Length: 52
Image 1 (cartoon, rainbow, N blue to C red):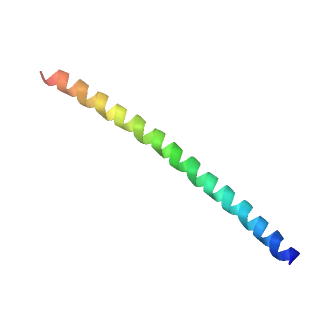
Image 2: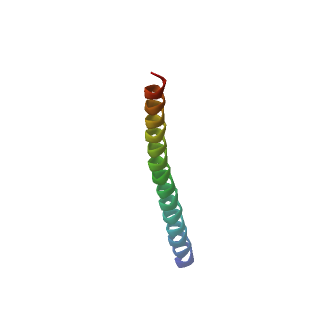
């Protein structure tokens, strides 16, 4: 029975680390996407001003 609880504890540790890693990657992707959209918007504004 003690072995079972040790196994479950290790399983929870691994899951917590994995979920933390996934959240960090998703957070990083969100920042990257927002920066890219800002860059694209600034490029379209510059190209519209140049075509006038």
